[in-house]
Amino acid sequence: MADTEKDILRGGQFLVKETNCEDVFTPEDFSEEQTMMKESVMEFNDREIIPHKPRFEAKDYALTEEVMRKAGDMGFLSVAVPEAYGGMGMGFVSTVLTCDYISSGTGSFSTAFGAHTGIGTMPITLYGTEEQKQKYVPKLASGEWFGAYCLTEPGAGSDANSGKTTATLSDDGKSYKINGQKMWISNAGFCSLMIVFARIEGDKNITGFIVEYNGENPNGIVLGEEEHKLGIRASSTRQVFFNDTVVPVENMLAGRGEGFKIAMNALNVGRIKLAAACLDSQRRILTTAVNYAKERKQFKTPIADFGAIKVKLAEMAASAYAGESATYRAAKNIEDRIAMREAAGNSHQEAELKGVEEYAIECSILKVAVSEDVQNAADEGIQIFGGMGFSEETPMESAWRDARIARIYEGTNEINRMLAVGMLVKKAMKGHVDLLGPASKVQEELMGIPSFETPDYSELFSEEKQMIAKLKKTFLMVAGGAVQKFGPQLEEHQQLLIAAADILIEIYMAESAILRTEKNVKRTSEAEQSAQIAMAKLYLYHAVDIVEEKGKESIISFAEGDEQRMLLMGLKRFTKYANYPDIVDLRIEIAEKVKAENKYCF
Ligand SMILES: Cc1cc2nc3c(=O)[nH]c(=O)nc-3n(C[C@H](O)[C@H](O)[C@H](O)COP(=O)(O)OP(=O)(O)OC[C@H]3O[C@@H](n4cnc5c(N)ncnc54)[C@H](O)[C@@H]3O)c2cc1C
Image (cartoon, rainbow, N blue to C red):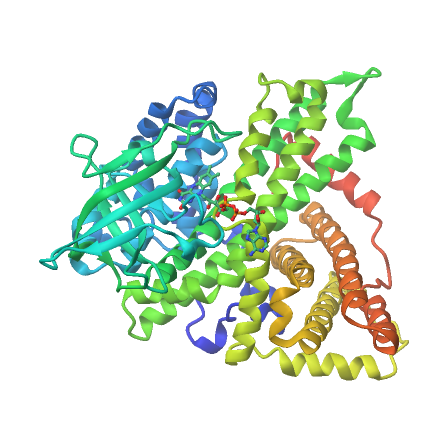
C-alpha cells in the first residue's frame, strides 16, 4: 500500500500523470483472503442462484428475499460494514469483488443485493450518527432487515434534487411528518428500512431520513403494485407513498439540507459496484457463448470456427478484460486512499467518504463503460446463439434484458458522462488536478514542428503507451479548446461534453488493460500473457478510433478556419500508429484461446 498522499494518484489525475504498471492493482493481485472470498461467493452463486434462474424469471420475488437472507447468513451483506457494527470490515476491493462474483446469476438478485448493501446501507454507515449506526447497521449487515433507497419521484429522476416529497416538523419538535410519492424503489416489497429524501419547508436541498417500515404497522406508508419490467423480473420494484409518515427527529441523516450530498455520494459507491456487478455477467455470457459455438454446427463446421464468430468472442473477451482491469485498479485506489486518511487520523467513516468521493470521476467512467460492455456482450451472445438466442429457453435472452437496466439506474449514462467531465473541470479549477499546465504544453506542441523520427518501439507496449500519452493530449486539446471557447457555458454544449467523456472513458479503460498486462508480463512472461497482450492491443485500437471520431466532431463544432485546421492536424498526429496492429490476427489469437479453454479464462 502506498502510504503518502504523494504516492497515490488522485482521482482524475490518471489523465495528466503517467502511471507505472507496478502501481496498479490487478485481479491477479488478489490476496489469499480475497481469493477465498471470491471462491466462496462464486460457490454461493452456483448453488443458490444459477440453478433457480427460471424461478427468478417467473417473478418469484419471495425467492429473491430468501436468497438475500442466505447471503446474509454467509456474511456477504456485511463485507463492507465495519466490525463495530456487526460487519466483516473487509477492504474496498473485497466489497467490489463480492458484488462482481455474486451478480452473474440473475440481474434480479444483483439488483436486490446492490440496492441493499450499497444505497440501502451505505448512507447510514457513511453519514449516520453513532446511535443510528448502532441501532440499524447490525440488522442490515446480518440480513435481519433489508434496506431500500427512496430518491426518485415521478417528476424527479435525473434531476434528483427537485423532489416534491416534504418533511414537516411537528409542533413539539420531536418528529417530522413525511408526505410524498417515490417511484422505482428497488427492494420496496421486502424492506424494513428506507432511506427517504424529502424537502423541509422549501429548502434548496433535500434532507435524508431513516424510515422504518413494518407492513403490520405501516405508519402511513403504502406500497404500489410490483412494476412489470423488461428485465430484472424478480427484483422487487414498487412505488412508495408516504402519508403523514411520522419519523423521529433523531432519524434525520447528517444535517438538514444535506440529503443531496448523501444521495450523490451513495451513488458514487453504487456506480463502481454496479460496474463490478456487470463483470461476471460478461464472463458468463462469453463462457456460455463459446461452449454453444463449439457445439453448434452449420455447413458441417462448428460455428466457433467461423471468422465472423471469432470476432465476437474476441471482442467480448477484450471488453470484459478491460472492464476488470479498470474496476480493480480504481477499487484499490479507493481502498488505499481510505487507509491513508485513516492513518492521518480520520475516522473510518470520514476516510471512506472522502476516499470514494476522490474517485467519483473514475466511478462514473466505470459505470458507463462496463454497463455498455455487458449490453454489447449479451447482444452478441444472442447473435452467436442465432434463433435460439431469441428464445426464453436459452440464457442469452434474460441476460440481454437484465443488462439493459445498468445504463439507466445509478444515474443514467448520459448524466454520468457529463458528470465525469464536469467533475474533472471542477477539480482542475480547485487545483486538485493540474490540467492547465499540460494543456498549455499541448498547445505549444501543436504550434511547433513535429518530430519525424520514429522512436524505438521494440519493447513490449512502448508504442501503445506512447499512444495512450497521445490520447491524453487529445483530451487536453479537445476539452481545453472547448473550455476556452465556451467557458462556463460549456455546460450547455452537451454534445461536446459527451464526446469529451467518451475520450476520457476510452483512455482510462485502455490504459488500465495495458498496465495490468504489462505488470503480469513482468512477473510471468510474454508467452504466458500472449492473449492478454492481444486483448490490450485490440481494446486500444478501438479506443483510438473512438477518440479520433469524437475529437473530430468536437473540433469541427467549436473551431473554425486556421485553428480548426491546426487542431485537426494535431488530432491526426495524436491518433496515428507508427505500426498498426493487425487486429484480425489479434482477434484470432484471443478467440482460439477462449475456445481452447472453453471459458473466459483470464
Ligand atoms: C428497475 C429500476 C430500479 C430503480 N431503483 C431505484 C431505487 O432503488 N431508488 C431510486 O431512488 N431510484 C431507482 N430507480 C430510478 C432511476 O435511478 C431513474 O430511473 C434514473 O435516475 C433516471 O430517471 P428517470 O427515469 O426519471 O429518467 P429521466 O431523468 O426522465 O431521463 C430520461 C432521459 O433523459 C435524459 N436526461 C435527463 N436529464 C438530462 C439532462 N440534464 N441532460 C441530458 N439528458 C438528460 C436521461 O439520460 C434519459 O436518457 C430505478 C429505476 C429502475 C428502472
